[in-house]
Amino acid sequence: MAHKHLALRARPLSDYCRFGLVLVLLLAPGSVAAQDRDQDLDRTAARQAIAEGDRLFKEETGQSWLRAIDKFKEALALQRALSDRSGEVSTITRIGSSYQKLGDFRKTIEYWELALPIHHDLGKFGSEGLLLVNIGNVYKSLNENERALSTYVQAIPLLRVSGLREREASGLTAIGGIYNDLGEKQKALDFLRRALALFREQGNKQAVASLLYQLGLTHDLIGEREKRSSALKKDWS
View 1: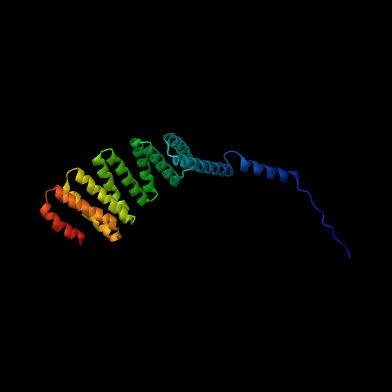
View 2: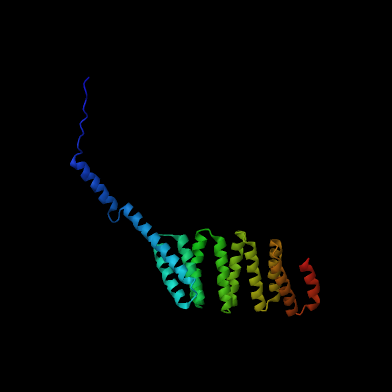
C-alpha cells in the first residue's frame, strides 16, 4: 500500500511581513486599539484619583479637603476627555462638597450648579432636584433668602416627577420657612400644609409633629391666636 507523505510548506516571507505590519498598525499611536488602550488607562487613573480623593475627604481636615479637591479635579479632567458624563457629574458634586467642608460656599454653589445641566441631560431629575435643594440650603445659610426660595421652587417638580415624596415634602417645608422669614405668613401656611399632607401620606410621624408645631407658631405670628385652635384641629385630623 502506497503511503502519501504530506509535505509541509513553509510560509512565504511576505506572509510574515504582512502579519507584522498588521500588528504595527494596530498598536501604532492613533489606531483604534491604541486609543482603546489609552482610554482604559485614563479610566483606571480617574478611578484611582477618585478613590484617593474620597480617602482624603474622610480625613476631615482642612488640608485633606484641599488635597481631595486636587485629586477630584485630576479625575474630572480625565472624565471630560473620556466624555464620561456620569463620572463627571459625580466628581463635580464631590468637589462642591469639599469646598462646602472648607466653608467656601461660593465655590460650593459654583460647582454644584455646573452639575445641574448634566443631571438634566442624563435624565436624572431626582438627582437634579436633590442638588437644587442642597444649593438652596447653602443660599439660605448665606441669608440669601430670595435665591434660596427660587432654587427650592425649581426643585419641587423634579422631586415630584421622580417620586421622591418625602424629599418633596422637605422642599415644601423649606419654602414655607423662607416665606416665614420674608414675612409672608399666609404663603408660609399654604406650603407648610402641603408638606404636612405629604409627610402624613408617607407616615412620617416625627415630621408631622414638627410641622404642626411650626403651623401653630405661624398662626401666632400673624395674630390669629383665635384661629389657631380651630386650624390645628383641622390639621390634626
